[in-house]
Every structure is written in C-alpha cells, then in structure tokens.
Image (cartoon, rainbow, N blue to C red; front, side, top):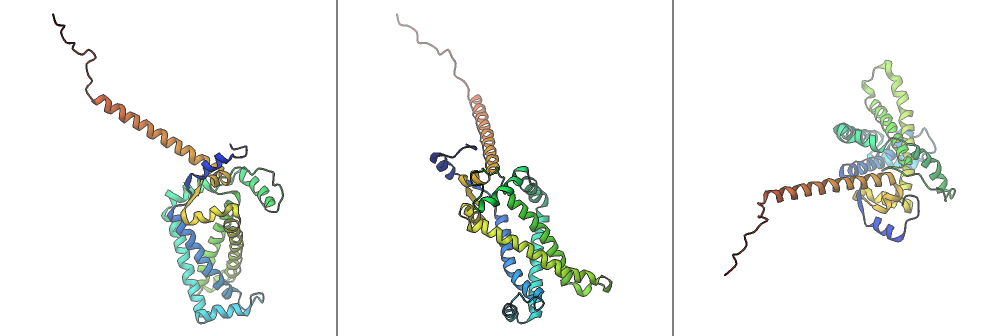
Length: 279
C-alpha cells in the first residue's frame, strides 16, 4: 500500500478514520501566537521603520499612531503585548518542558534524510516539476514545517531578547548602550525573517487544496486517515502500530480476566449420578 496507488476502497477506508494530531494546548498556543503577530507586526513596522525607511507609506505610520493616540502610546502598547506574548510562550515551554516539550522535540522535530529529500523535491513539484517522483514518507511534520520551526525558534528568541533590551533601555548602563543600538536592527531582521516564513506557512496550510486539512486541524485538532497516510506516512504508521499494540494488550487483559472469572466458578462433576434401573 505504501508503494502503489490506493484503490477507491482503500481511500474510503482511510478517509473514515479520524486521528488526533493537535491537542487543546497546541491549538490555543497556535492561535494566541497568530493573534499576537497580527497585532505586533503592524505596530512594530510603524515604530521601528517610521520615517527612516521610505518604503513604508506615511499613511500606514499615521494610521497606527492615530489608532493608539500617538507614537508614545503605540510604543507602550506594543511593548506591553510583546511582553505578554513572550511570557505565555516561555511559560508554555518551561511549564511542560519535561512532559511535553522534550518528547515533542525528540519525536517530531529532528530532521532526517527523508526530510531533506522532501525539501529537494517538494518545492520543484509546486512549480510543476518532478510530478512523477514520489515524495519520501514524512512524520507528523514534514521537512518544510520542521525547518520553519527552527526559524521560528531562533527568530522568537532574538525578538524576545532584543525587545526586552529596547523596552528597558532606560536601566541599561551607558557603557552598554551598544546593546540598544544593535537590538533595533536585529529585532527588525528577526521579525521580518519569521514573518516571511509565516507567509509561506499560511499559503501551504490554508491555500493549497491538498494541505487544507492541516489548516482545519488547527481548529478541530483532527485529521482523517487518508490525509495522514498521504502526507505524514511515518506518523500514520506509528499511530496504527500504537493502536494495534493497545488493542492487543487490551485483548490479553480481557482474556486473562475471563479465564480468572471461569476459574472462580465451581466446576460440575464430570460423572453425574445415573438414575437406578427399575426391575
């Protein structure tokens, strides 16, 4: 089944399956992060770029400043929400570091040979090339999603550190003022780097028809078996193996309990008394 086209019956059978790919905490964090970017990136453009970069229209800067009542309130609210955003992300990582973060990173985020090969083939297929080449099987996240996650982690750390430096620049000693000077361009470059990845991420997840389930799974947390088999084969097969192991374990326990219950019932004598023959 892994190396041939699926029949209609196989497709229908897979489509009838439902697998949980994201849990509530993942979904809430994802949409909180998305909302934060929708707020922080536009306001950040009006603050960091301002008049220094003419490719940002004055109308945009004026709109942002009018909405927030001036440049100072704009900077204040950008900094306030930025710290809330950073606190939530850091809290999530450290609160579930051993239980969720380490297992998640270990099982889903390490790049493999199949991931690198996927990265070489998939972009070409998006432009109509190598259509007949089968993509290597992927895990819960494909090579592009894994690579993007590295970009997000590095960018988020840089954004968080430089943002805190700029927010609390008034307590930084004069001898360390160079930190503030470097923080502004690093903050801007990091935000632009992550946002450029966001554009590709949104296009791949919400626009491309074959990836549409990935988008809706960020609301329901679930995907059907056909999507999982076609796009995340390794993850699908691992989930099926876990299910089979659980069912086998459950069946063994059921049989053991049944045998135990049978042993507790007193047995009947194999030689039942026979009625006496009449004379």
